[in-house]
Image 1 (cartoon, one colour):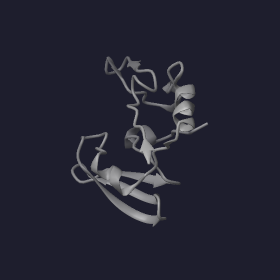
Image 2: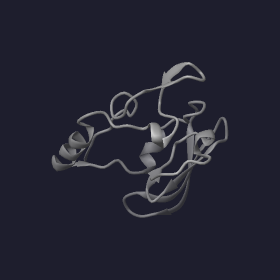
Image 3: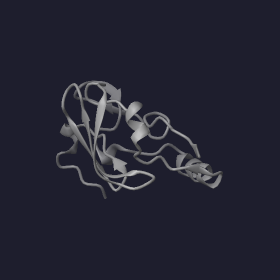
Image 4: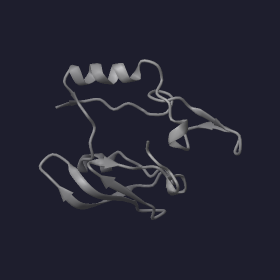
Amino acid sequence: MKAIFLDRDGVVNELVYHEEPGIIDSPFTVAQFKLLPGVAEAIKQFRDMGYTEVIMKRELVDILACPVCKGDLGLNVEDENEREIVSGSLHCLECKVNYPVVDTIPNLLPPKLKDGLRWE
């Protein structure tokens, strides 16, 4: 299986200036998330070349880190099939924050950013 991993911030999406902390960083809301020009087409081309989509697999736990404290993550599996984790959660072993895995997709958005967030 061939797979490609792309760093999100500054590679796939635009960085955002946040006035309150005075920093340039990841988007804090869905409304701030904007793909960089050419990214959607590039991802389509990767798929056409036979690269697989990255989905939640047990092996990913070894390379993922908590977005809040950069600690190691543990995995709780509710449902899985022969290819992927369908549902469950990731949890930080250091700061104890939980991140849901729903329909094979891990949501690693920090908790303070999840409140009131709606995907449209």
